[in-house]
Length: 194
Image (cartoon, rainbow, N blue to C red; front, top):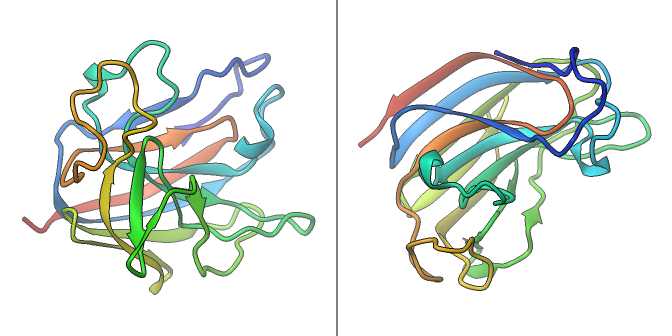
């Protein structure tokens, strides 16, 4: 699967998510991704070599037209350059929180311990999810982040969202992101553990 902006003149905040049709609770998701080419003109600075997996997502049919991101947890993919080295398989929390080392994390993104990946190299990423119990991010066989208890952020919810803050996120949809930089996905595999 390819996210390409080759027919765009400029980016106009048209972010994309491609959803799998079924929600899941406990599973392993494995794929390879790589960033290619240049970011489209007009893309946000944070969108440079940025993509990811959104999981425990709200039903896409319930996302409001003006809603910024789905209520979900994000496995953030970042690519590095010589000028900007960044870890990948970080966790970001749009409208949610997680627990790391028994502490509730309210920051939007938390970095993993991954090495840096440059240019258009393929990266093997694996997400292991056990409901709202434990979640692992694995890069090329190395566990680079572990956290638990994904939950709704009560202070930052889209209008009309049916769950209150503090409610656990035990399941949801899975989506791959398009955030203004060309990215490719291959060898996408999903194993249901429920």
